[in-house]
Length: 429
Ligand code: LLP
Image 1 (cartoon, rainbow, N blue to C red):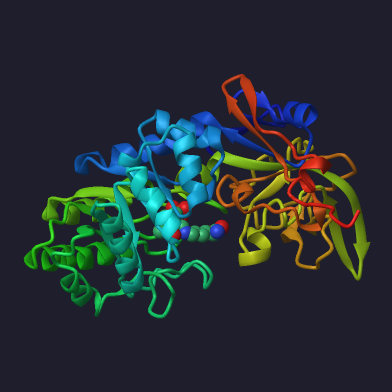
Image 2 (image 1 turned 180 degrees about the vertical axis):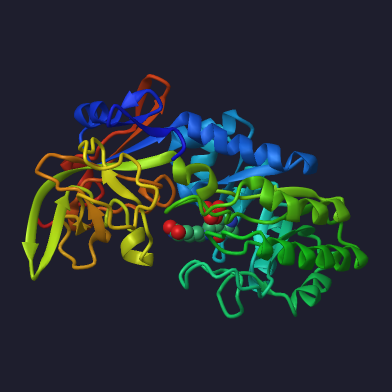
């Protein structure tokens, strides 16, 4: 995985041995590689260079301020989906000129805030939202710059919980009616329809949905222009997949190959909203084995990370590679096929301390024998890991560390018991 590699049977993040980080910062611990983050951002920037793109890093995938700041420092904009994410993007040095505002349920206050902060594009998902945004903008004496988000009715087949472009999901305007909606707001004093937005789902491991989606987007750009809208932006969203198991993901160039010709045909500026592609394989979750046990004919490894730290396996049955940080000499350090039964391993469920049977990081996974105190790495955990973490079971959320070469910095401290109750008022005391 990007910038995580084994040397002398020890996992390193860039040049730092992971056991050193676990010792210093404790576990569970999210560890990110700056080099990996920048390499992935650069890969997208380079692949799409011909379209002079605005790469709007999707804050929802990992909103840590230092990670957002790194993105801003290296030319990225932001895709935000709430007032909180807008706050993060701006705090991290982002500028409204490169911020797109998404979301099916923006409040009037969020719209006002977005307009005040100079957000360059609101992705609008319904007629009701369009009119509300128009009214808010008018009350401020401005025109809201809008990209109509269209549901292209394409099945990129991700997961029932992350498909966003198949008929019947809550996202976007129906492709059959979006042209009428656009026509209904020609000349609206509070709205400037300047773009078309399409996000196909996440994660996507084939370029084909983008080819088909982009073709539909081109038709919409033409139709909107014919009715007088000055369409300048084509926003193809995020969704580029990463390798969770082997090398199943495509490089950014493969998506560029199908998207760029469509952008060229329209003459629009391209906007992309990648999250997972940039941060997913740039982070791991490090945990420590608490106990092992056998029950009901099954072996369990109970370690100190849980569904509250990384909910993807529980929520989507997602697969994350899990492997010891310091594997013994009788197993490979990086099994090519991490699902196979390799010698000197046995099938185990890797679970956490949370009181739910659905609390697991891996099921039926072949791992070498483990004992109390051993460190485990859960890979590809940079995206939708910490971002979806909670305090369930009153567990303290993990710390996060950013590694740069030989140096490491704490970019989020571990929570304390005081943090847990900080927002509560013990008023019956
Ligand atoms: N743009 C829009 C409008 C989105 O809805 C999303 C993700 C993105 C961009 C960024 O997608 P990415 O490039 O990161 O794939 N929690 C789920 C993923 C939910 C994605 C939601 N929308 C997971 O852990 O797989």
